[in-house]
Length: 370
Image 1: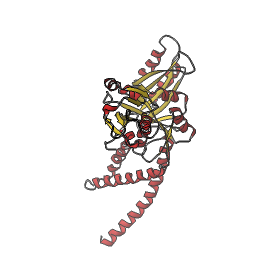
Image 2 (image 1 turned 45 degrees about the vertical axis):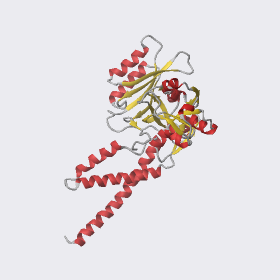
Image 3 (image 1 turned 60 degrees about the horizontal axis):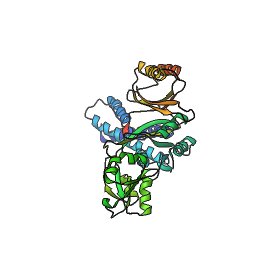
Image 4 (image 1 turned 120 degrees about the horizontal axis):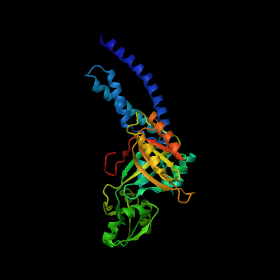
């Protein structure tokens, strides 16, 4: 074969790849639409790894295999950039203001999305439910302060699905006006949970406390009032945003302090695979009888499902009655899962799957590689 024949083969292969490229990007557009509906992030490292492992089996030449892996990685990077462009208009609801931990979480999960702030969890949830936003990012639990009951209650009565759960390490800081020393501070403003997370620090320093609707609002209040004797407890991002200085770093007692955020949308996502690393959120009520809760738990355990979270919540419209929130490991859509849910529905007056999500991911904090 001479060089002209080789170039003709390359040209023919390139023409075929051009047609396949268009076909691939059309499929990528469908994937982007699927992710938009379900509030799923563009990045999916597990799926990318699985795709590469499957594709390289077709490359018998060991010398060429690493080059093909690089070719696949570059192709997937191009596909993700296209998805970013398609999803740039994705509207994400969160509760709070700029600099709130919810805003930080939403921005890191969906860096190309349009973030919209709402004054309450309910309003952010309703925005996604009505279609004003594509999805909502809301906190469901803090490792120190416990569950966020308002959001869990919305799951019971609302129509959104949880399609992903992310954990955000929370570092609280004492922040004040530029040039102010910590010794000058008399009063500290923050969200009640932040104040709880730092209560030992506040006690030792003898600070007066004042509550705010969230940590970022506290930071904004300090900046607007320009009172050098008042500080806020908030994130580094909030300090930067409102032109404040950090007077003391990492003041929360629990260095493992983490808040878990759920991504909720109108459409449900069905995790691929056998579900071994997946989890589902189960909401249920029990009969008002002796051993009612035990019966429900026994049904779940009888089918070899592990509940890693189980909490009770009071029902708003029924005094002294409760429903239960559980996060269960595994796949409820398998045959075993369907049998478990059927048996549970026989034992419980109300059973609801509020969402399914793959293994939980950690959101990098400021300074970590995203």
